[in-house]
Image (cartoon, rainbow, N blue to C red; front, side):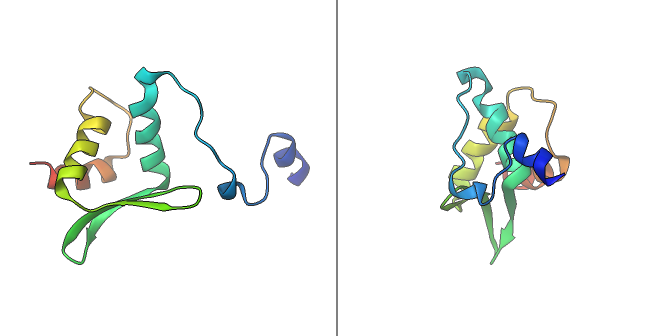
Length: 96
């Protein structure tokens, strides 16, 4: 199985070299939504809403409600139908 994974591109420490794919502009919000659903965390920490997204070297964190509302609009206000319900529910609690 290890050889099969290597054959299909799996490597050790991929998080150190992973780069975003080149995708069409109209698919960017879909890609980001999938990335947030897979490697993101949203919740209330120390009485503040926070969104964290794991990246290759830095952990991206957004704490301001203004930023989170903008991210919500990017991810969910385009009539999307595929997303993790639990993360959208949390986003909905901060939407003003």
